[in-house]
Length: 275
Image (cartoon, rainbow, N blue to C red; front, side, top):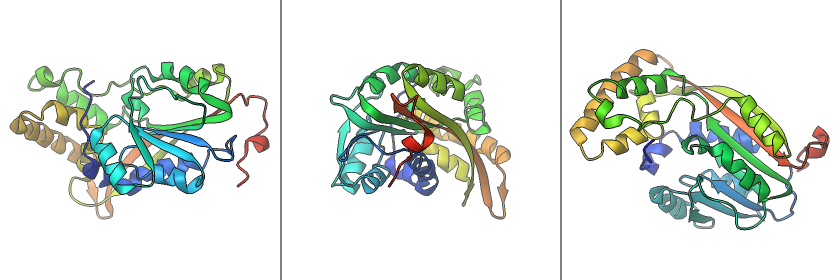
């Protein structure tokens, strides 16, 4: 998989829809062990969602981490009161005990991310929380058509191995079992959003900010080829996601997990956030 370059403005074009799973995950995070918690937002992007963590825990020390210079520049400009730093989730481990490790739509870009959980859980305080959300739709036309097109004779030599693999996200039970074996009380669930997108070719516009980024990066040195690939993909998406009078519907399944360290014996009410 090619490490993509990111365009914060393109990503934020659908910020309302993209924030919704962040908010839904945040609502399921229980009370944290410290009164002034230490929190990491791993894969913070342009920082608009990191601000929601600060709203919920105004006394917390929060750091947003990302490996994209473009995203970090935008985050620092838009959220000057918050702290942001470069980090790669493939190798990052907290340097001090944390109350919450939060990651929204990032781990699908991290091959072998299950192997990172041991270090992350180990860096949590007792009762600390690992909470993450990942797109769980590599079997949707959005991705299958992209992979099929990239594998055709015209594009295979340029795009082989560039896109996210179909197994970049695991089954819910895999996450539940892995986190439970690390000593966590874990809640895992899936939600399929029915995003209604306005405008012309809105599904293409959506994926230009996320899943298509590796292909756009790989073809960046050849604008003519890049535009040709995008044009072919556009036609496939138009057929798979037809426009309706009310907009174009993009079904989008996501997987969520909230793991509380050392809380297997706690009751649901004990783990409840009592804000």
